[in-house]
Structures are given as structure tokens and as C-alpha cells.
Image 1 (cartoon, rainbow, N blue to C red):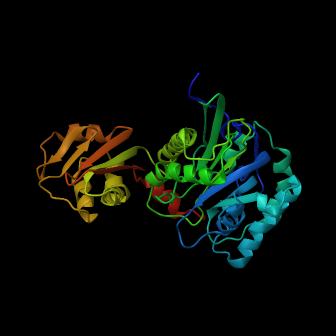
Image 2 (tube, one colour):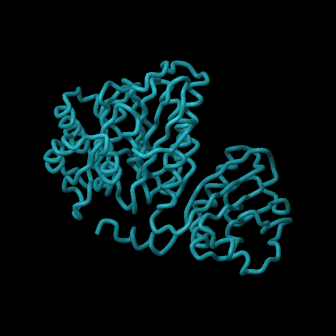
Image 3 (cartoon, rainbow, N blue to C red):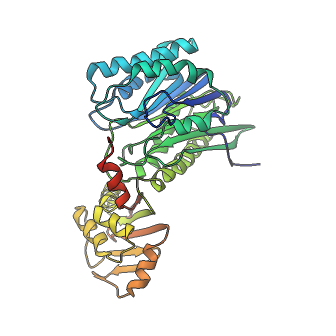
Length: 402
């Protein structure tokens, strides 16, 4: 047996338990508090938002990760604990301390993450009352509860797990993620948590996580807005019994490739569940002068409200794509530009190719629309995933706090 997808999410790898519960943060009694625990000491790594305004849980998790080790991750949804000043940091430390006491761990072994409305203080008392319950509910079957508990405007949980042979040992990776709005590259406004039973050094674990995020979460966008709370964390229990990965050899590259594959699966699930989304689009830019220009062009197109509403209406107004390409500021010669939609050449030689409107609209009605932009200026290429912009997105965000 070679690689296989499997159930279990974050508890699929050996040495992990998870749970979820309702603490009272959300009014609708939906789960809003999740806990992931490594049953033995684990190596840890994380990546965080590039927004210069960072939420309190981000700052605390960054502090605790300096040792490269952790045992528990506490996640709450419904409150971002951002724009809350020093009190917000104290609140984050208070709930982390409660988990540490319940699990008999040092405080620095507990990482925290939050998602929800910015500007509201964390309801500490409610969370403290729920901590004993979320600890008691820990189990190998608790992955689904935890995946539900981290959601905000998502319509369903996103989780996945992979197993593959590493040398003579079979190893596993599990993960879960949330994010439907405020999703943009670097990181993308979302939370993601990974677990693995692979034995690996902290330095290489972080390197693999960086590579995986660059090829997945950094390649998606829903609305171009960057959050204050973006967090990606990974714990490695080492319980698979493989020879520890301590150098960037074959075993490391295999691990990094599988982590990238898992992260990409979750990233695509996030885009497909974008707020109000009805379809996804792959924006591929090829033959750019540099990777920087390729990414700049792709992001301009992927984040364009006019392009996204064109997708929503299955409109044939492909001139919006060309306008976004020109607005990106990259080197482009109009007479050389080519644009293809689901493999059909739509723009070439500086003009839109004649085609029946019904045929173009049929291309746009596909569940996944592939847009290829050929700049014909160099050798660099990239791809981003985005979704359409519908009335559902506007309605949801117009009354997000009400």
C-alpha cells in the first residue's frame, strides 16, 4: 500500500487527541472552543499573519513557540481577541494557563488561537468554565468536534489526513482549517492546524511548513483582505518510530511534499467555501518576466471585484480580465497577450477573438473556471485560486456583527 487519504483529521497520526465544545462565546450554541493535545512531548512550529496589527493570541503563540516545542493548542471562535490592548494579552495567557493546569503542563507548552469579531474582549469567565469540559472530552474521535468548533462563517468543517511509507515505517499527517472571508495571500485569513507522528527536528519542521504554506495558503484569495489572526500551527509527536529527520535529505523532501499536498487540499476547500461563493477560479499566469510579476498579475486579477462578479454571473465580459492585467503594472505588450478560459483562446493579438456569447458564458458556468493569462514576456509562472463575489458575500458582511 502506498499513499492514501484517510479519515481522522488531526487525530489520525499517533499520539494526538482532540475535542470541541460550546463555551458560550457564540449565541447560537454552536461549538466554539477546540483543543488539540499531544499525549507526549512534541516538536512544534508555526506561521502567522503578516498584518502589522496582530491579535493577542498570535503574540502569545509566537512567544511560546520560541522553544520549538508544545503539547496543546486551544482555539476559540466567535471572538478574535484583537484590538484589546494589554488586557487582551492577559486574557489569552489566562485561558492558556487554565489549559496548562488541567493537563499538568508548563504554560509555554500551550499555544492559543482565536477567530471572530475584532475589538471585543475575550469572554474569559465563560471559557474558564468550559476548559475542564473540553479537556474531559479529549479523544481520538474528537477531531470532528474540534473541526466544527473553529468555524465562523464557514458552512462546513475542513479536515483531511494522509498516510504514506517513510522508509520502513508508515507515517501520518492530519489537518483541519477554517476560513471563508477575509482571505488573502500571506497567509490568507484563516486558521490551520496540522499534526504528524513523524520524528523531525524543529528547524526542519518549520522549513517544511513554510514550503507547504507557500504552495497552498499563500496561493488562495477570497476577498483580498488580510486578517489580524492568521495562524498555522503544526505539532510532531515522533510516535511513528521513523529514523528522526535531522537533515534535508530524501526523507525530509518526502515529508515536505506530503505536507504541501495536505495543505493544498485544505486550501482548496477554503476557497470553495468562500463566503457566498458559488464557484472557484484558477488564475494562472505564464511567461511573465519574473515570478514577482507573475504573482502581481495573478493577484490583481484574482482580487478584482469586477472579475469576481463576472464569474458570479457567468458573464462573457472577459475584457475585465484584460483590464486587471493592465492595471497590475507588470510588463505586458497588448499585441502579444493571450487569455484562455477553460482551454479556449478568448484574447489574442491585442483583441478579443470572435466567439458566440453563449459559448463563452457556458465556459464561465463551469464549477471551476480555469483562466490562463499568457504574457509572452519571459519564463516565470504562478497560479492562484479564488472564488466569485456574490450578493451572499455582501449580505453576510454587511451585518457581520449583528
